[in-house]
Amino acid sequence: MIQPLIKFSYQSLTTNSRYAEENVVPKNKKRRIIPRSTPPPKELLLEFKNRINELNGCDLQFLMLKRLFRSDVKTNNNRLSMPIKEIRADFLTKEEITKLNERENGSDDGRLIGLKVTMLDPCLKEYTLPMKKWSMTTNTYNLVKEWNKIVSANKFEEDQELQIWSFRVNNNLYLLLNKL
Image (tube, rainbow, N blue to C red; front, side):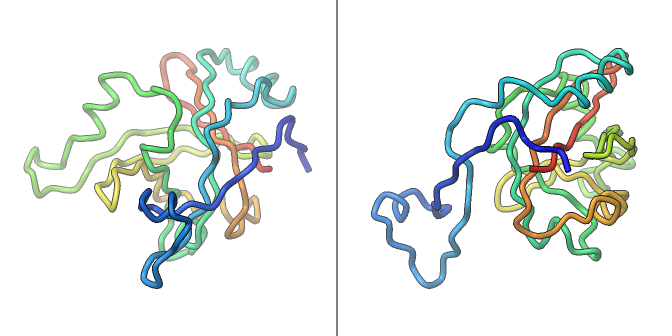
């Protein structure tokens, strides 16, 4: 198992800051675990760096620390959600942002087309899957369709922590998952 170089600490907060400040959680609100505003890890493990170098990758950026929720690992959901407000870097180009907002048939009610992304899992296996921007409770990027294969291959479970990084290979977006 790959050991992280830096461990993050967490604090328990609700999604409503008023309740977080008072440290009171009403019965109808769920507690969420979110990362503190700590700086990203300084270094990525050598195995990952070597693979990125082999691919001639560049522009490596730490995006977020993700605690997997039930919806991230349920087979019938088949998606990894990445709330935009939790992402710590501007990793998309203007063209990619435009592509994430495009819909089939050019109509407002058509399905989102999404953006093709290559993902390296913790075992450095490559997967290609679409990333879509959904307006849920908050705007969220979701990696869909092939996500269940990654969950199964890596035995991801609810509450497991991942670091998500981005980098570029020939201007194409790659994401990297580091299991903590």
